[in-house]
Picture: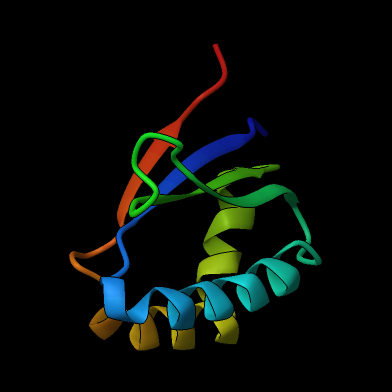
Length: 96
């Protein structure tokens, strides 16, 4: 199985940033314990602090697929929808 690399681009509304951050911090803690999660880090750009990235590495696409149906992800995606400026953009990458 090939590893899966993923960057999720997250753009919280200014008035919701602390709520989004709190939620994502709890999501990071839960996700790092999942089978196949090799990296799951939330970062913000030095040149664009209002755009956050969740940088992920999974052992395989199957591991990421399993992650996406966990309760904390399913509930979280629903809760975050109204707190973001636009839907989260997912960018997938492969090792070269």
